[in-house]
Length: 356
Image (tube, rainbow, N blue to C red; front, side, top):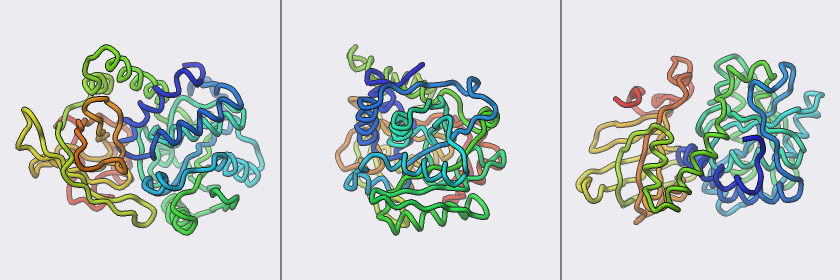
Protein backbone atom coordinates (compact mmCIF):
# COMPACT_ATOMS: atom_id res chain seq x y z
CA UNK A 1 0.00 0.00 0.00
CA UNK A 2 1.59 3.26 -1.14
CA UNK A 3 -1.29 5.62 -0.47
CA UNK A 4 -4.66 5.82 1.22
CA UNK A 5 -7.36 7.08 -1.07
CA UNK A 6 -11.11 6.91 -1.56
CA UNK A 7 -10.79 3.48 -3.19
CA UNK A 8 -9.16 1.63 -0.29
CA UNK A 9 -10.48 3.61 2.67
CA UNK A 10 -13.53 1.37 3.19
CA UNK A 11 -11.39 -1.76 3.38
CA UNK A 12 -9.01 -0.15 5.88
CA UNK A 13 -11.90 0.98 8.08
CA UNK A 14 -13.52 -2.47 8.05
CA UNK A 15 -10.27 -4.27 8.82
CA UNK A 16 -9.28 -1.81 11.52
CA UNK A 17 -12.67 -2.23 13.11
CA UNK A 18 -12.00 -5.94 13.43
CA UNK A 19 -8.46 -5.42 14.74
CA UNK A 20 -9.79 -2.91 17.26
CA UNK A 21 -11.26 -5.75 19.38
CA UNK A 22 -14.52 -3.91 19.83
CA UNK A 23 -12.89 -0.60 20.74
CA UNK A 24 -11.12 2.37 19.23
CA UNK A 25 -14.45 4.05 18.45
CA UNK A 26 -16.94 3.56 15.64
CA UNK A 27 -14.90 3.22 12.41
CA UNK A 28 -17.83 4.54 10.34
CA UNK A 29 -17.64 8.00 11.90
CA UNK A 30 -13.88 8.11 11.45
CA UNK A 31 -14.21 6.95 7.85
CA UNK A 32 -16.51 9.87 7.06
CA UNK A 33 -13.97 12.32 8.52
CA UNK A 34 -11.06 10.69 6.66
CA UNK A 35 -13.04 10.61 3.41
CA UNK A 36 -13.82 14.31 3.63
CA UNK A 37 -10.18 15.16 4.41
CA UNK A 38 -8.96 13.11 1.44
CA UNK A 39 -11.51 14.76 -0.84
CA UNK A 40 -10.30 18.19 0.22
CA UNK A 41 -6.57 17.56 0.42
CA UNK A 42 -5.86 14.49 -1.69
CA UNK A 43 -4.58 10.96 -0.93
CA UNK A 44 -2.28 10.26 2.00
CA UNK A 45 1.16 8.84 1.25
CA UNK A 46 1.99 5.70 3.24
CA UNK A 47 5.59 4.90 4.22
CA UNK A 48 7.05 1.73 5.69
CA UNK A 49 8.87 1.92 9.00
CA UNK A 50 12.25 1.31 7.37
CA UNK A 51 11.70 4.22 4.97
CA UNK A 52 11.57 6.80 7.77
CA UNK A 53 14.77 8.78 8.41
CA UNK A 54 16.41 8.13 11.81
CA UNK A 55 15.98 11.75 12.91
CA UNK A 56 12.37 12.06 11.77
CA UNK A 57 9.72 13.36 14.18
CA UNK A 58 6.82 10.92 14.17
CA UNK A 59 3.69 11.97 16.05
CA UNK A 60 0.87 9.55 16.85
CA UNK A 61 -2.57 11.15 17.01
CA UNK A 62 -5.84 9.72 18.30
CA UNK A 63 -9.18 10.30 19.89
CA UNK A 64 -9.59 9.73 23.62
CA UNK A 65 -12.78 8.98 25.52
CA UNK A 66 -15.73 6.65 25.81
CA UNK A 67 -16.81 5.16 22.44
CA UNK A 68 -20.45 5.35 23.54
CA UNK A 69 -20.16 9.15 23.68
CA UNK A 70 -18.75 9.27 20.15
CA UNK A 71 -22.07 7.95 18.81
CA UNK A 72 -23.85 11.09 19.98
CA UNK A 73 -21.06 13.64 20.02
CA UNK A 74 -19.54 13.41 16.56
CA UNK A 75 -16.21 15.28 16.17
CA UNK A 76 -16.20 18.48 14.15
CA UNK A 77 -13.11 17.33 12.27
CA UNK A 78 -9.77 19.04 12.75
CA UNK A 79 -9.40 18.32 16.47
CA UNK A 80 -6.42 16.02 15.83
CA UNK A 81 -4.77 18.71 13.71
CA UNK A 82 -5.30 21.22 16.54
CA UNK A 83 -3.66 18.82 18.99
CA UNK A 84 -0.78 18.26 16.55
CA UNK A 85 -0.18 21.99 16.11
CA UNK A 86 -0.26 22.55 19.88
CA UNK A 87 2.30 19.77 20.39
CA UNK A 88 4.57 21.10 17.62
CA UNK A 89 4.51 24.54 19.20
CA UNK A 90 5.37 23.08 22.60
CA UNK A 91 8.29 20.92 21.46
CA UNK A 92 9.61 23.55 19.05
CA UNK A 93 9.72 21.44 15.90
CA UNK A 94 7.36 20.26 13.22
CA UNK A 95 6.17 16.69 12.76
CA UNK A 96 7.54 14.93 9.70
CA UNK A 97 5.16 11.95 9.86
CA UNK A 98 1.86 10.98 11.44
CA UNK A 99 1.26 7.53 12.95
CA UNK A 100 -1.81 5.82 14.43
CA UNK A 101 -1.50 5.20 18.15
CA UNK A 102 -3.67 2.10 17.59
CA UNK A 103 -5.03 0.26 14.57
CA UNK A 104 -8.54 0.20 15.94
CA UNK A 105 -11.83 1.69 14.81
CA UNK A 106 -12.00 5.45 14.62
CA UNK A 107 -8.42 5.70 15.86
CA UNK A 108 -7.19 4.20 12.62
CA UNK A 109 -9.17 6.79 10.64
CA UNK A 110 -8.45 10.00 12.56
CA UNK A 111 -4.68 9.84 11.88
CA UNK A 112 -5.47 9.46 8.16
CA UNK A 113 -7.65 12.57 8.27
CA UNK A 114 -4.97 14.45 10.20
CA UNK A 115 -2.24 13.38 7.77
CA UNK A 116 -4.35 14.60 4.84
CA UNK A 117 -5.04 17.94 6.53
CA UNK A 118 -1.39 18.42 7.49
CA UNK A 119 -0.07 17.19 4.12
CA UNK A 120 2.15 14.66 5.89
CA UNK A 121 2.85 10.97 5.18
CA UNK A 122 1.50 8.34 7.53
CA UNK A 123 3.61 5.46 8.86
CA UNK A 124 2.38 1.93 8.11
CA UNK A 125 2.39 0.75 11.70
CA UNK A 126 0.90 1.55 15.08
CA UNK A 127 1.84 1.46 18.75
CA UNK A 128 -0.43 -1.42 19.82
CA UNK A 129 -1.30 -3.79 16.97
CA UNK A 130 -4.90 -3.60 18.24
CA UNK A 131 -6.73 -1.11 20.50
CA UNK A 132 -6.34 -0.58 24.24
CA UNK A 133 -8.27 1.79 26.50
CA UNK A 134 -5.48 3.67 28.29
CA UNK A 135 -2.81 6.02 27.00
CA UNK A 136 0.18 4.26 28.62
CA UNK A 137 -0.72 0.93 26.96
CA UNK A 138 1.66 1.36 24.04
CA UNK A 139 4.76 -0.53 22.95
CA UNK A 140 6.95 2.62 22.95
CA UNK A 141 6.56 2.60 26.73
CA UNK A 142 8.43 -0.69 26.84
CA UNK A 143 11.49 0.97 25.28
CA UNK A 144 11.42 4.03 27.52
CA UNK A 145 9.51 6.46 25.31
CA UNK A 146 7.28 8.76 27.35
CA UNK A 147 3.82 9.90 26.28
CA UNK A 148 4.57 13.39 27.63
CA UNK A 149 4.32 16.03 26.42
CA UNK A 150 0.74 15.25 25.49
CA UNK A 151 -1.38 17.78 23.63
CA UNK A 152 -5.15 17.54 24.07
CA UNK A 153 -7.81 19.36 22.05
CA UNK A 154 -11.59 19.44 22.13
CA UNK A 155 -14.27 20.43 19.64
CA UNK A 156 -14.60 23.91 21.16
CA UNK A 157 -11.03 24.96 20.36
CA UNK A 158 -9.53 24.35 23.82
CA UNK A 159 -6.01 22.89 23.90
CA UNK A 160 -4.07 21.62 26.90
CA UNK A 161 -0.47 20.43 27.28
CA UNK A 162 0.19 17.68 29.82
CA UNK A 163 3.72 17.25 31.18
CA UNK A 164 3.59 14.32 33.61
CA UNK A 165 6.11 12.49 35.76
CA UNK A 166 5.39 9.17 34.03
CA UNK A 167 3.09 7.56 31.49
CA UNK A 168 0.52 6.39 34.05
CA UNK A 169 0.27 9.88 35.50
CA UNK A 170 -0.22 11.33 32.02
CA UNK A 171 -3.12 8.92 31.47
CA UNK A 172 -4.78 9.89 34.75
CA UNK A 173 -4.45 13.61 34.07
CA UNK A 174 -5.59 13.32 30.45
CA UNK A 175 -8.54 11.12 31.45
CA UNK A 176 -9.66 13.71 34.01
CA UNK A 177 -9.45 16.40 31.33
CA UNK A 178 -11.35 14.13 28.95
CA UNK A 179 -14.19 13.63 31.44
CA UNK A 180 -14.35 17.36 32.18
CA UNK A 181 -14.54 18.19 28.47
CA UNK A 182 -17.36 15.75 27.74
CA UNK A 183 -15.64 12.34 27.46
CA UNK A 184 -14.46 12.96 23.90
CA UNK A 185 -11.21 14.76 23.02
CA UNK A 186 -8.25 14.37 20.67
CA UNK A 187 -4.60 13.80 21.52
CA UNK A 188 -1.12 14.06 20.02
CA UNK A 189 1.53 12.36 22.15
CA UNK A 190 4.25 9.68 22.42
CA UNK A 191 6.60 11.44 19.99
CA UNK A 192 9.00 9.00 18.33
CA UNK A 193 12.21 9.40 16.37
CA UNK A 194 12.49 7.48 13.16
CA UNK A 195 15.15 5.19 14.67
CA UNK A 196 12.70 4.15 17.42
CA UNK A 197 9.95 2.91 15.12
CA UNK A 198 11.21 -0.65 14.62
CA UNK A 199 11.13 -1.31 18.37
CA UNK A 200 8.19 0.94 19.20
CA UNK A 201 5.59 0.14 16.54
CA UNK A 202 3.89 -2.96 15.15
CA UNK A 203 4.79 -2.87 11.45
CA UNK A 204 2.44 -2.89 8.46
CA UNK A 205 -0.81 -2.79 10.43
CA UNK A 206 -2.53 -0.39 8.02
CA UNK A 207 -1.69 -2.82 5.24
CA UNK A 208 -3.05 -5.67 7.36
CA UNK A 209 -6.26 -3.72 7.98
CA UNK A 210 -6.68 -3.12 4.26
CA UNK A 211 -6.11 -6.79 3.41
CA UNK A 212 -8.42 -7.95 6.19
CA UNK A 213 -11.19 -5.60 5.11
CA UNK A 214 -10.75 -6.65 1.48
CA UNK A 215 -10.90 -10.35 2.43
CA UNK A 216 -14.25 -9.83 4.15
CA UNK A 217 -15.60 -7.79 1.22
CA UNK A 218 -14.46 -10.31 -1.37
CA UNK A 219 -15.90 -13.24 0.59
CA UNK A 220 -19.29 -11.52 0.72
CA UNK A 221 -19.16 -10.83 -3.02
CA UNK A 222 -18.38 -14.50 -3.67
CA UNK A 223 -21.22 -15.61 -1.34
CA UNK A 224 -18.73 -17.42 0.88
CA UNK A 225 -18.22 -17.05 4.64
CA UNK A 226 -16.74 -13.62 5.50
CA UNK A 227 -16.08 -14.62 9.11
CA UNK A 228 -14.02 -17.59 7.94
CA UNK A 229 -12.11 -15.26 5.62
CA UNK A 230 -11.29 -12.96 8.55
CA UNK A 231 -10.29 -15.88 10.75
CA UNK A 232 -7.93 -17.19 8.07
CA UNK A 233 -6.36 -13.77 7.52
CA UNK A 234 -5.70 -13.41 11.26
CA UNK A 235 -4.73 -17.06 11.83
CA UNK A 236 -7.35 -16.83 14.55
CA UNK A 237 -9.43 -19.33 16.50
CA UNK A 238 -13.21 -19.57 16.73
CA UNK A 239 -14.73 -19.01 20.17
CA UNK A 240 -18.49 -19.06 19.54
CA UNK A 241 -21.23 -18.19 17.07
CA UNK A 242 -24.49 -17.19 18.65
CA UNK A 243 -27.06 -14.60 19.61
CA UNK A 244 -26.46 -11.68 21.95
CA UNK A 245 -28.93 -12.19 24.79
CA UNK A 246 -27.76 -9.57 27.29
CA UNK A 247 -25.52 -6.51 27.46
CA UNK A 248 -24.77 -4.44 30.55
CA UNK A 249 -22.94 -1.24 29.72
CA UNK A 250 -22.08 1.96 31.56
CA UNK A 251 -19.96 5.01 30.86
CA UNK A 252 -17.66 5.46 33.83
CA UNK A 253 -14.47 7.45 34.29
CA UNK A 254 -14.18 8.19 30.58
CA UNK A 255 -14.57 4.52 29.57
CA UNK A 256 -17.37 2.29 28.32
CA UNK A 257 -17.38 -0.67 30.71
CA UNK A 258 -19.58 -3.74 30.74
CA UNK A 259 -20.28 -7.33 29.83
CA UNK A 260 -22.00 -9.08 26.95
CA UNK A 261 -23.58 -12.53 27.04
CA UNK A 262 -23.86 -14.65 23.89
CA UNK A 263 -25.75 -17.93 23.64
CA UNK A 264 -24.59 -20.42 21.03
CA UNK A 265 -26.80 -21.45 18.12
CA UNK A 266 -26.90 -24.43 15.73
CA UNK A 267 -24.07 -26.85 16.60
CA UNK A 268 -23.06 -24.63 19.51
CA UNK A 269 -26.51 -24.46 21.12
CA UNK A 270 -26.29 -24.69 24.91
CA UNK A 271 -22.91 -22.96 25.12
CA UNK A 272 -22.62 -19.48 26.63
CA UNK A 273 -19.82 -16.98 26.01
CA UNK A 274 -19.40 -13.93 28.24
CA UNK A 275 -17.29 -10.95 27.14
CA UNK A 276 -15.96 -8.40 29.61
CA UNK A 277 -14.93 -5.06 28.14
CA UNK A 278 -13.46 -1.66 28.97
CA UNK A 279 -13.83 0.08 25.60
CA UNK A 280 -12.24 -3.11 24.16
CA UNK A 281 -13.06 -6.77 24.77
CA UNK A 282 -10.59 -7.96 27.39
CA UNK A 283 -11.80 -11.33 28.66
CA UNK A 284 -13.80 -14.17 27.08
CA UNK A 285 -15.31 -16.89 29.26
CA UNK A 286 -17.13 -19.86 27.74
CA UNK A 287 -19.30 -21.98 30.02
CA UNK A 288 -17.42 -20.59 33.01
CA UNK A 289 -13.96 -21.33 31.59
CA UNK A 290 -11.59 -18.58 30.43
CA UNK A 291 -10.85 -19.07 26.72
CA UNK A 292 -9.12 -15.81 25.74
CA UNK A 293 -7.63 -12.83 27.55
CA UNK A 294 -6.05 -9.48 26.85
CA UNK A 295 -3.56 -8.69 25.36
CA UNK A 296 -4.62 -11.19 22.66
CA UNK A 297 -7.34 -9.91 20.35
CA UNK A 298 -10.98 -10.82 21.02
CA UNK A 299 -12.95 -9.80 17.93
CA UNK A 300 -16.73 -9.79 17.48
CA UNK A 301 -18.07 -9.92 13.92
CA UNK A 302 -21.55 -9.88 12.48
CA UNK A 303 -22.10 -13.53 11.52
CA UNK A 304 -23.65 -12.72 8.16
CA UNK A 305 -21.70 -9.70 6.91
CA UNK A 306 -18.37 -10.17 8.70
CA UNK A 307 -18.43 -6.51 9.71
CA UNK A 308 -16.93 -5.63 13.10
CA UNK A 309 -19.26 -5.15 16.06
CA UNK A 310 -17.99 -2.56 18.52
CA UNK A 311 -18.63 -2.74 22.26
CA UNK A 312 -21.02 0.19 21.97
CA UNK A 313 -22.77 -1.52 19.04
CA UNK A 314 -23.25 -4.83 20.86
CA UNK A 315 -26.99 -5.24 21.44
CA UNK A 316 -29.67 -7.81 22.11
CA UNK A 317 -30.59 -10.05 19.20
CA UNK A 318 -27.43 -9.63 17.10
CA UNK A 319 -26.07 -12.81 15.55
CA UNK A 320 -22.34 -12.66 16.03
CA UNK A 321 -19.22 -14.76 15.69
CA UNK A 322 -16.38 -14.28 18.17
CA UNK A 323 -12.75 -14.89 17.21
CA UNK A 324 -9.48 -14.70 19.09
CA UNK A 325 -6.18 -13.77 17.44
CA UNK A 326 -2.59 -13.58 18.63
CA UNK A 327 -1.24 -10.22 19.80
CA UNK A 328 2.22 -8.86 19.03
CA UNK A 329 4.62 -11.04 21.06
CA UNK A 330 6.04 -8.02 22.89
CA UNK A 331 2.74 -7.76 24.77
CA UNK A 332 3.26 -11.17 26.38
CA UNK A 333 6.58 -10.13 27.94
CA UNK A 334 6.49 -9.37 31.68
CA UNK A 335 6.47 -5.65 30.92
CA UNK A 336 3.73 -6.01 28.35
CA UNK A 337 1.50 -8.03 30.66
CA UNK A 338 2.07 -5.52 33.46
CA UNK A 339 0.73 -2.82 31.15
CA UNK A 340 -2.18 -4.66 29.54
CA UNK A 341 -2.63 -8.14 30.99
CA UNK A 342 -5.90 -9.25 32.60
CA UNK A 343 -4.77 -8.58 36.17
CA UNK A 344 -4.08 -4.92 35.35
CA UNK A 345 -7.80 -4.57 34.57
CA UNK A 346 -8.81 -6.23 37.81
CA UNK A 347 -9.63 -9.72 36.51
CA UNK A 348 -8.55 -12.51 38.85
CA UNK A 349 -6.97 -14.58 36.07
CA UNK A 350 -3.53 -14.83 34.54
CA UNK A 351 -2.85 -14.33 30.85
CA UNK A 352 -3.95 -17.39 28.90
CA UNK A 353 -1.37 -18.14 26.20
CA UNK A 354 -2.96 -18.05 22.78
CA UNK A 355 -4.35 -21.38 21.64
CA UNK A 356 -4.29 -22.96 25.13
